[in-house]
Length: 81
Image (cartoon, rainbow, N blue to C red):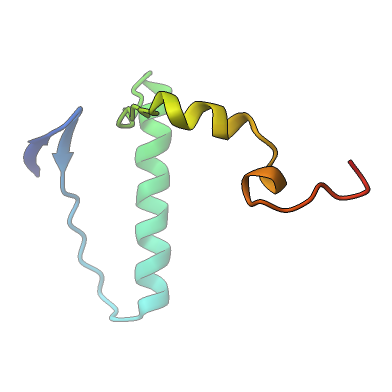
């Protein structure tokens, strides 16, 4: 069932009905179906896009990131340094 368009994705729903209400069987069947879908995608060169994230740092933060953690926290460097 093609459900919707999403950011960098087409959303499909797979529905299954089992003859038993056993939760263990449900989980096993769901896992098997997901693995088969993943395998079919790989065999056909279909990849799943992952959202890209941008990280924006303020220039005042960049210098702080380069400092050792102990100095940022105001602690004295350990004798192991």
